[in-house]
Amino acid sequence: MADWQAARPVSDNDPWSIFRIFLRLGLTSFGGPVAHLAYFRDEFVTRRGWLGERAYADLVALCQFLPGPASSQVGLALGLSRAGYAGAFAAWAGFTLPSAILLVLFAQGLAGYGEAVPPGLLHGLKVVAVAVVAQAVWGMGRSLCTDARRLAVMAAACVAVLLAPSAWGQVGVIAAAGVAGLALFPQTPPADAEALPLAAGRRAGLAWLALFFVLLFGLPLLAQLTPVRTLALVDAFYRAGALVFGGGHVVLPLLQAEVVPPGWVSGEHFLAGYGAAQAVPGPLFTFAAFLGAAMNEAPSGWHGAAVCLLAIFAPAFLLVAGALPFWARLRGNGRMQAALAGINAAVVGLLLAALYQPVWTGAIHRPADFALALLALLALMVWKLPPWLVVAGSGLLGWALGFV
Image 1 (cartoon, rainbow, N blue to C red):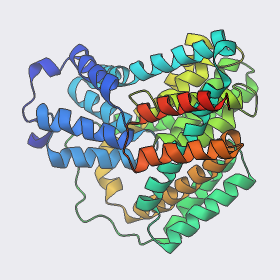
Image 2: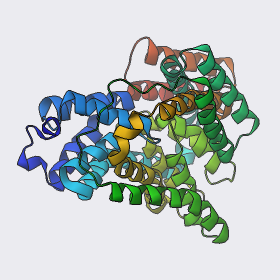
Image 3: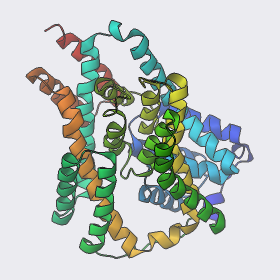
């Protein structure tokens, strides 16, 4: 317990102070979830001493084990440990709102001045999404698909999703991959498993987990019985947030399957918004705010953005609050580790399928598009340029290519 509570300044314990700390991180944390976790370590382990190295590593392990946005879940857990549920909300709001507001403004700019935006600029944003997703596939594949069996699960998941392109098809693939993991991978618990030094009652944890599953299975039924568009949005974005393993990029195929086929958001705006999401700090899940603001029917604008943003992040809060009391037992369970290995391999396959459809097919139409995507990929992976600079440069080059 001392590891977690060491050097705990009183001024850091109120929600307003927590909001200010996370707001600064939300304004400056570029680079994706891995970079976010590094920023958090520097801020809360090295500078503020909120917790020690081992406790932080265990907390990160928990949030990577759970579905949802790992960096945002770490922030929620840190806020929860400092000031209860108000602290968790303050941490989430500070880290999330800057990028969400920027993306809503971008969506409103497309809606109000879309005809004035050069088509080549939007196309450049769509092309840079190819490079961003390709980088994510490569990085996740190297870390999660390390042997022939994992590669086989990844390939099978990719083929299945391409043949059955629906949100529920992807859910089925994830479930099947978990079962395959139990059969294919060793069921050996990690040797260094230990309980996180974070107090939380098991009864409260069970209540939060029960609410998570009630919403996961109840919202689709309620949305079918009650033809209210807002409820349909909550259902779609809640499921996307609840079923994403592997980080923010993996939410792309789930959201695309939910919002593009029914015509809620056009495919062109979907890819342009996804490209713009790479240029802002904070969690990639704030792409949901762009989609909510860009809806073709009400609720849209700020109302739609708030609905979609809260819905996609709600599972993260419920899972963190519910899983913390049981983490030591879960982390030491070999069967859970084996199932997770299968799920992790499958999510690489889901992302690979998304790289082809809709990202590649929606953006690469001529040799110049391929050249721009390759240039963006080199800028990200070889030259290590910041994502916001690559996105801005791709938009400008796409605009210039529009005159060719």
